[in-house]
Image 1 (cartoon, helix red, strand yellow):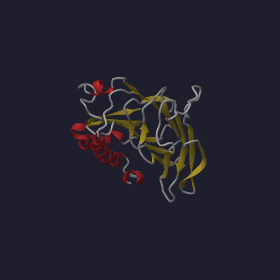
Image 2 (cartoon, rainbow, N blue to C red; image 1 turned 30 degrees about the vertical axis):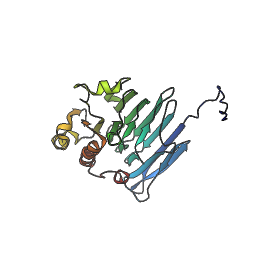
Image 3 (tube, helix red, strand yellow; image 1 turned 90 degrees about the vertical axis):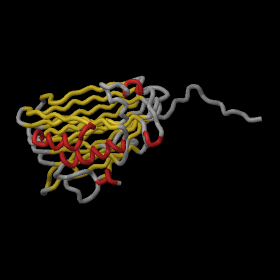
Image 4 (cartoon, one colour; image 1 turned 45 degrees about the vertical axis):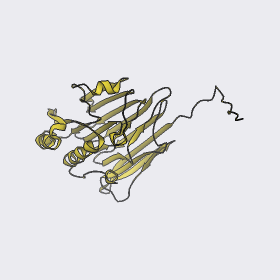
Length: 278
C-alpha cells in the first residue's frame, strides 16, 4: 500500500525575485563599465573586446511563472554606446496563481546610443505576463528598441488557448513623450489572434522602434524587408526622427528571418548581437 506524502497547506511556492543593473560610461575612447549589480536569478555577462559594449542578460531560473518578478535597469552615459540582449528566449510558463512581471528601465545620456534587443518571449498556454519598458533619452541620444512575442511554438505543436499578456512602452526624449503604447490580450488568446484586426492566426509578433535623426530615411528599405508580414511608418519628432515597425508572422521561425534583416538595417553600425546567431 502506497502512502501519499503529507502536503502543508500553508507551504508557498518559491518565487523569482531578480534584479540586474548596469551603468556604462565613455572613457579612453571606449564604452566601459562603471557599475554593475545583480541579484537573484538576474545575471549580466559582458563579452570582452566589444565596442559598442554588449551586455548579455540571463534569467537563471529558466523562465517565469505567476508571481515571479524580473527587473532590469540600465544607464548609458554621455557618448557611450551599448547593445543589451538576452542569452536566450524568455519563457512565460503556465501560472497556478498571480502574474509574472518583467520591467526594464533605460536612461541614455547626451550623444549616447542604446540598442535594446532581447530575444523573443515565448508564451505558454495558461501563462500570465506583464512586460514594461521605460526609456529616457537625452536630447541628442539615439535608441533602437525591440520586443518580440511568440504565442506558442508551432513547430512543437503548441497552441496558446488561454493566457493573459500585457505590454507597456513609454519612451521619452528630453522629458517629452515620443512613443507610448499599451497592448493587452487575453484570456481567450486563440480566439483573439484569429481575428483579422489582430493577427489573423499569426503566432509571432514584434514591435521595433528606432529613435534617431536618420530614422525616416530607412523607411522604404524597412518596408521592403518586411514585405507582407508587417508595416512601418516614420515621423520627424522635434530634432530627431522616429521609425515604428510591426511584424506579424505565422510562427517564430519566419519572424526571426524578418527580424534579423530588419535589425541589421536599423543597427548598421553594429549589426546583431552574437548570441542571436548561436
